[in-house]
Structures are given as C-alpha cells and as structure tokens.
Amino acid sequence: MKKKKLGMLILAGLAIIALQAGTAGDALAAACPAITVANDKGIAGEFPQQFELAEFEKLANCKMTFSQNPAIGGLNKRIIGNPALPSLAERLPREPLVVAPYDKIGKYGGTLDMISNALEAGTSDLLSVRHVNQAAGQEAIDKYYQEMQEDVRRRNDLINIKHGLDSPLLPNAVGYFKKLFRQMDITLAERSWLAGDTFSLADISLGVYVTRMAGFNMAQLWVDLENLNAWHARFKARPSYAEGVERWGDDTSSKRAKYAADAFPTIKSLWQAAI
Image (cartoon, rainbow, N blue to C red; front, side, top):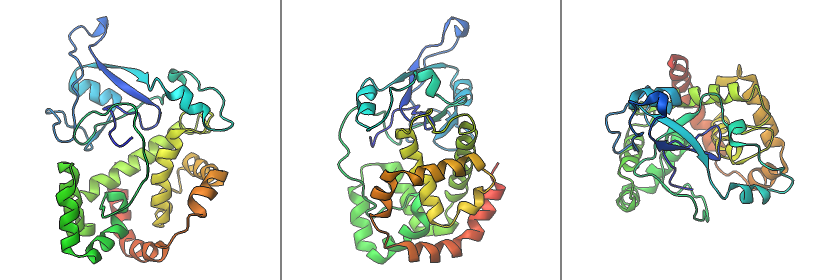
C-alpha cells in the first residue's frame, strides 16, 4: 500500500496503531492526533517522521491500542507453506516504531500493480539515482515533479538532487537507518523473522532497505549486528529472493559500486555520529 496509516508498526509489518482515547488509567489523555509530515500538529520527535511508541504517547499525551488488517489472515494463506498467523500481541516488537505518513492517513485495500524507480531521489536511492536524474536533464526532472502530488516528498527529492551528499536531509536519514537496523537486530534476537517465526510482509518490506543499502557496499557499517546479518542471510537464501531479485538482473551494480566508494567516507562519518 502506498499510503500508510499513522502508526504502521514497521517491525510488526502487518499491524497498525489505532488512534483512540486513553484508558481509565490515563483519564487526562486526549485522543491521539492523526499527524502527518505535512501537518505534525506541533509533535516533533528525535527523528523526522518516526517515533518510539512511548515517545509518541508522551509527546501527544495519549494512549494507543493495536489492530490489524482484517484481511491479513486470507492474505497470509496465499503464501504457500505459511502456517496460521500468531496473535497480534505475539507479533508486535517490544517497542514498536510509529511512522507518520507524508500527507494523509491511508486505508486498507487497493492493488499494487508495479514498483518503479522512475525519476526518484529518495534518500535510500541517493547514491546513484541522483546521477540518473541529473543525466535525464532538467526538463524531464521539472516535468516529473510538476506531476508529483506529494508536496513534502517533492521538496525533499529536489533538495537531495541539488545537494547530493551535502543534502541537509542526509544526516537524519542515516541516523534513521542506524536506529532502524539496531531495532531490527534486537527484535531478531528473539525470533527468526521480524513478525515471529513465519516469513511475512514485515520481512519483505524491510528486507528491501537492508538489501538496497548492502548493494551500495554499506553492510560494513553494521557488521556488529549479528542477528540482523543472520536474518538477511536467511532472507537471501529464500527461493523467492533468487526468483525475484537475482534472476531479475542488475544493470546498475557498476554505477552503485563507483558512487558508493565515493560516498562511503561521508556515510560512515554520519553513521558513527548518529546516536
């Protein structure tokens, strides 16, 4: 789904946080505000767009409860060999990560027909796609962003394209990945996969980021995260990975290697500086 509900639990993958009033023990707590990146309603955490659950509840003076996609059981059965899903409580991490959407809260349902890099400059693609964007020419870049509906993303992308490794958005992005990978490592100390003992959408969603960063030769940054590295090895050993990634082909590896080598000192410095 392109539009994520506020409170999508990254590490649970299949759960969302319901915004509602506090319990009796939190009688003074108001309903949790449905914030977005475009309208944060004055709630700002340590990192942009994402919060620890306890951090968000404290800042917003509210209490969150959990629910899941009502269709998730049926979707899970479509993954051949998957057992029934454990209860939602068993699949949640000890400290969920709350992520705010760019413009609005999404809804369950819809169809994802394809995924395309197109003329994007998201920070995870920063090291090589920026160069592709620039090579496309200013006219093509202008046309692409004129048609983009998400104002916040448009602004961030254009900043990244213009400044590259000097982008003011890069330090926070690197810090976000470091914190995310550490949280994944902690979660994976207790389970084989991110949402439990069963491979799920949570692993697919975050496996993309780890694989992408590793593809830029950045894996040396997290050699100490043994649980994460063991999980990524299991992730890549799955037949679906060979079918969907390795057999797909990779015509950008040489560019990634070149740009990653140039960028690594900067990324490493930001990584080490991040808390």
